Image (cartoon, rainbow, N blue to C red; front, top):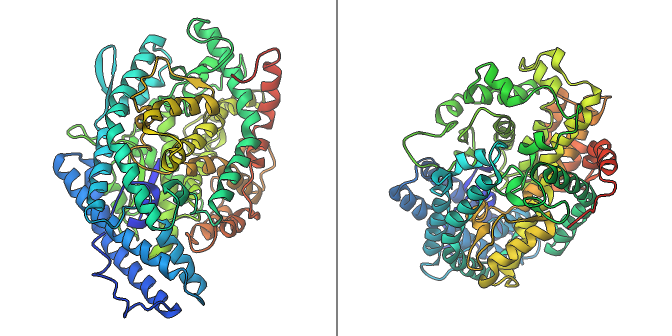
Length: 612
């Protein structure tokens, strides 16, 4: 789940766009002297040039992502190669101007964004940008075309994701899908990925960073070291909740499959958790649901199917939530230009994403939507990106982005937290008589935790892994070993089959070949509860936090829009304070939300060995 807005913001979102035409010819020093005034003129020229280029670049990438062919790959690689050259040249110049005294605060901020806004910077060496673009396009296409097998028959990425969540499959079938997907998709990428790291690190060093990972950590209005420490602090706060969930789920899987498949102690077998990457466990909720309280009495996917809802109906429902908060309806072009279902006649990248093609109002989503609960939630998430994009569309080009990248992911997520039984009643999906009673709260919270809490260590380790690759502590020969060690250390999971040393299992997760910085998703898991608690307080909610829905509350919508409209124009703590009243990220709202569940899990886990 990600977004693509402007050429710059899309880069920050990791669409592996690697480049624009060179910097409006060459940047003559006479036109932009090393003075405060020269810096201001340079920034203005850069913004105009990037804005003008972004429309064609975004359209080219849209066509490539929704119709993967050799021709569209070539066109995207060319456009993105041009973009990288331009972005690198701007970033190098911005680094020089940043040292000028007496800069206007706005100009200084924009120079920082220009310097830090490239996900993968190419060095200025002739041909480097084109080579990097070729590699990143090839990596993305390799993933998009990837297939595993089920019962020996090929199965594509979208379908294999769905089937990994089917609890009717045997451990052997789950193991087959997991292993073939990782072997077929990840391993062929490794050579290209190693080359890409070398090129991008050269580019990062030209910009004054130790490596690409250090550059990524520099984009949060704090030092790279402070940011690493901040994310670790948030993880340590939430780790006891994750360990309690892991211990409980492991016991339930042991009871289901037996010691030979899932031992009672130690790590959990990765393919048994209902998701190809074991990043969210909600699909196996029926296997771990507490007796009585665990039966919520409904499944959102079943409710949608019972009413004959289509993927478009699901998107209309998502739009309706935002409209209830006072946001304008989606533009007509959204419905004619979005890819809501997978086309039958061509290869596409199914991974859900939200796009702002023209930096104004040409907002779209790209999904291979299926009528199920997961995609209903995903739609609310992706539309959060779109409404954010439209809210800040009057900002200057360099501010067309979230306050930080975690904000962009958190907006739709916190709205999706409002997909409560009461909300389902309000939109006519659930009969009021079927709303779960208070004795079902443990089940409601456990179902949420299976996705929200289970995700936390995965959300952190993806970038920890890449930081190690970029700074050289993880060597190419150890890519697979290090990946599986980190998965064990953070998540407490283990592969269902022996993994080859020369493999590249990490490449089987879209965001690795797609070069999307991933800590944003970890931050979003924390921020969404902070936003949600703030919205519920604004709405005057008095009941348990997890039952709150602010659907229809236009006061919440107005305050939310005030934060969204800021874009990246101010440091993120200021934006956070506008909506929540606090300028510090806190895991406390998440822990408050799940506090009743933590008490229950601790009681269930008595006598069990925690950890692995």
